[in-house]
Length: 514
Image 1 (cartoon, rainbow, N blue to C red):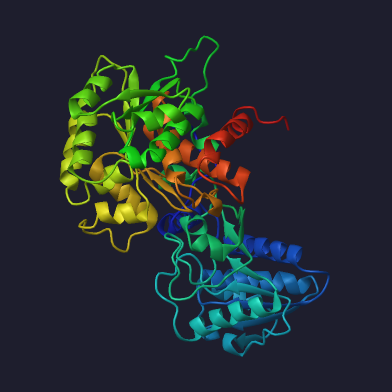
Image 2: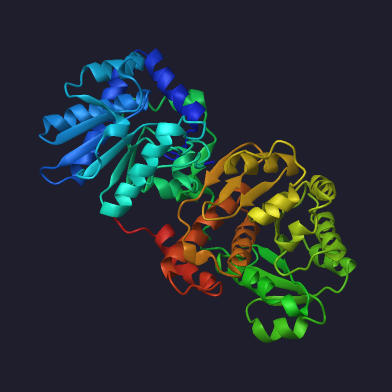
């Protein structure tokens, strides 16, 4: 995988390790806190006019210490700053206690702070490490902040993460602050990107506070933002000598005559993303429907598993997409097993890739072991693309999945099935069996339309046909899918997505000069 810079997402444990390693190297924790508070103050100054009243609400830990530093610096700039503390002053310790000592203004009980005349509230109650639901005074204070912001239209600036958001999972723990801007340190956390955390964060700014990049080599994070920098080195770009056969051949398996549209959407996606040839494997009954609608995409009649197997004996057909509009049941299971048997890895041949989507996954919901056996026997690249409902059905009996974050569930599923997992949604997660995870944050709500996932499956299948590694192919397809959705916006339907891809690819591969 290409070198990734600034894309690492650090969970709560990893961020604590980054702090600890920095302090062990000789950088005082008080310096890190001073830098963090100064960064928060800078962003607050950008939000404020030349004068006004700022309320800073501080909690018991280092997040509260950052708030004390920010309050002190904002007061120096001439703002009226009122500081509320959630706990008793004498309970603070360590760097947070030192930061409180440097604050010269009064410290009021947080619940007594008047929010009504505030122009800005800085939420420094709890950071990413919170791992329990907010209760009591903390809960009441969060609800008050949200109500104040909604009523007045004035912003909340969150330190690290909005209080109540889990930094590892992005989950709301009881209640959570809805901030307009969040300021975090060194690296984003998964909670900044995953939903609903991303919504609560508003716009997130990452600032450096003195943690060296070298700590990453020891932490070895495996979760990253899905950005082109992470996979562009593997993205297929044809050479001048290329022809259609060197660009791969994707086969899309169609369902019955009344469900053919999904296969055509996948096929169009595979062709647009660069597969040299695309064939729809169809029943005789569905052939007239496909033949009347397809032009550059070919058709091949496969009325039985042996005919499907025979089609795939041609090793030039090196990627298969099955599932969109397939139908659910034993016929679907047999078709999937036939594909795996036909695509079994041959050490002397070019590796092949298989994408399992929709009905191809649901058909194995009550017999996942049968799917695993087919995957293991084939020893080929496999990508599965479930949405949350399909994922839950497929892993309903898996112990230990409940309560895990979305990246951890996808990561565990990838290890169970020995394949790449694309767990779809507005925060799509791509997970590899080796533990690597990409999280997308570029999806648009306009992608929530019938057939959108079928096109995504085709994108992946088209990249696999061009010999892109499965994990990187899935991540690239997800990112491109999101960019296409954003490029169209309101009124998007699935048929639009492949037609938007050329312009998106042009921007990706021929970026404008700076």
